Length: 236
Image 1 (cartoon, rainbow, N blue to C red):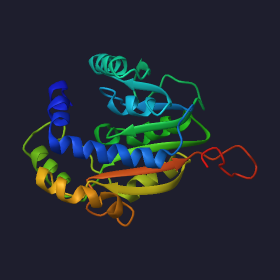
Image 2 (cartoon, rainbow, N blue to C red):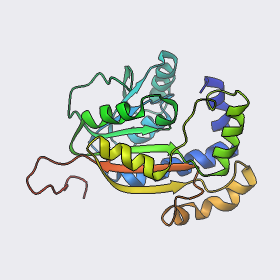
Image 3 (cartoon, rainbow, N blue to C red):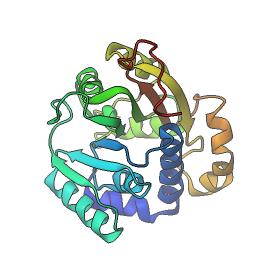
Image 4 (cartoon, rainbow, N blue to C red):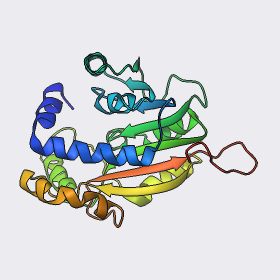
């Protein structure tokens, strides 16, 4: 997403409401992050990475675009939320195995070609017992319909974007050796400001009951712990 598009979106009422809901859902699925290492894959301008750093996570942000990393660095300094920034590709993460307590990717898989490889790489750098958080564009919503139409008309990035179902996300997690523990939806209104203001207060209630119609899907999955019992106690 071009720099000016990010800025226009975040300065709009619709953008602020929508980003706030998506961020709140990822916070909820993450649970306690204080003092734990977190990798944000495809961090963009650092909005989500900085938000988690302000919750005292030890955040590393990775992106392929140096200009995005520069924006993330400026945001980090402006908000006094230190994050480490790394230039690299999601398909070949420049980190050793089992390095992070959390790995997160928001609206990344929809824009990469080899989604299975990216999920596998994120699982590789996740510690045993660690948690993967994935936020993606839902396949069955008025937002996805509008974006598909724009894509058919040739608009980037929607021309090549992939919209996910919960079943697809679960399959990718399982293929990477992860166990999905939560699948929630968010953003149940059409891309209209008045609708966002009207429906946003019920978003969390809807997200706990169905993913159908959600423009944003969020999944949490855990990597099996080495302990014999297999019990994950680090996030309780």
